[in-house]
Length: 457
Image (tube, rainbow, N blue to C red):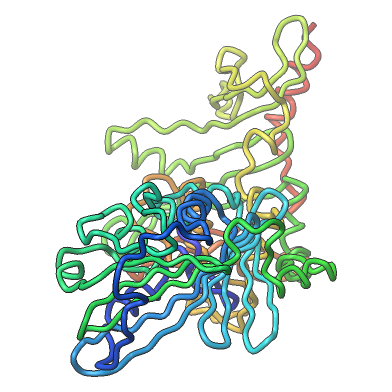
């Protein structure tokens, strides 16, 4: 999944920093090796034990000094990476960006010039991030502590790919033959505070990783800890947006199913999907049904119906199809029922549709915008591609393109209010539909059939 931080934090999964560091092959000025010869005496700072702990823990701080020479400019970059059991952060200069655990999920946060700002909640456990090898990861888990000697300093073999790769990856570099071919020396030294890994690239510069607080109990990120102690929460949804989306809570509304263009100047409406807490009904237009029949595909008006059950029928949700009686009026026949689920008769639980996107962890990801590139009106936008893609898969089937953002746009007001869901795509098109007529849906022939089935004993 992709997490894109809107306003609050950068994408710490892909770490745009990676490409920056790969190009920052800096400086003609280099620092000498931490030591010039291998120490054989038994150490007092427990080098191997510290490496063992570092391999397993998510509690440590690593200061990265990155100075490699690309032959044109002298770049020096310093970053601090902080890992705790419940949070992760990256600091560069006066800016810190990270994730924090919250109520089974995670939220983003930033600390810029001392100001703490919380981002929205994502439905992803912090442990899933540690376990996801394409996400934030303690790359020191690739260390091989058994390789080091008895002293407090050790000079690795340049063929020790386990330890070398772990340190390169913690420097946000992908191990490559070209990179390792210019490596002169690779060493580690233990001291009272922790470990210092040093990669000497000779005239090409160096990388130094200073790791402290290794496995330290109750290790926290001070600013985050203070924010939460003071009652700070993840970003909350805009009150106006919550009020707007509350119109969906009745689960009584309708939504046009769009249209298709035939030829140069003819458009066919597909139909309307109706929602109530007792049934969902897809009412296709006669023109669309006829058009699809010409294409060799039989389209039937159909839906889902909640039935309480009785002696003749089980409680649950049933799929139904709609026929016509002698007068041409729509009608459901009992033989047209298929039990979909007997685990619940709650339509909102079985078929949440739009209501799925009224949850607070979703709405907190939307930010107000003064205009949008489609209707030009005010609304709300989220840059979360995972949220947009989830909605697109649920509502628009068989889509081939990828959403780039997600707009929620109020249109009209009062009895004419509707909510437009708009998904711009990566090919400069957009998917769009509106939900309207809140609390007004009532389809007599379905409700009459439901009542007749409820009376059957």
